[in-house]
Length: 263
Image (cartoon, rainbow, N blue to C red):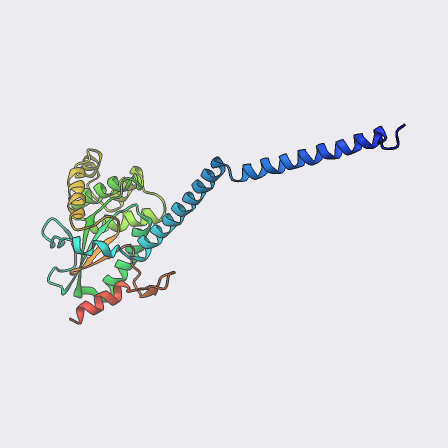
């Protein structure tokens, strides 16, 4: 054996080490490429976009609930139609403060706002007039339009506000459906045959949809939306003042009415 020659076993071991090293380098390279591949980047972008959209949805819900609005639209608001004999009015229209509410009987925030309006009735009495108008959000509240029709069918028999109370009670109990609405009509001692005929034939559907279309010209885009005299309040404003999660001070309906009464 030549002195400079390596034993066969040593040469094989060295070759094996080199091969393993090469394999490891290639594996690491592939891993790095996988981490920055276009597909992975697109996936991360999609995840980020999804998270942003979810955050926006949460913000939209909070905005609707606490009663804020897009200040960029203020200049586009047209004067709301003043109450007339087509409207459902609680109180006297000669009252110094008129509260015109565009509402949805199936909306959960509207059910909360029902309590706010009720507090205003009890505290301010004949100093205010409450005017109810329809704005059923049919894209997210499938029974809202039928509930609105039920209120109009009850109004035919002089019991709009009584049915109004029943429908919001049904909303809170998650019992808005035909048989319950007809049971409400019976409980209110309406002529049930007349009510059923009105309700089952969608008698007031076009009138309600027309009122909704008109509302959009006043920049009404959701429920509830309220006009307190000339001031617009978008969302389920609380009765008392509050501070939103972002630190904004929200003027409650009580404060708004009190301020307008002092003018």
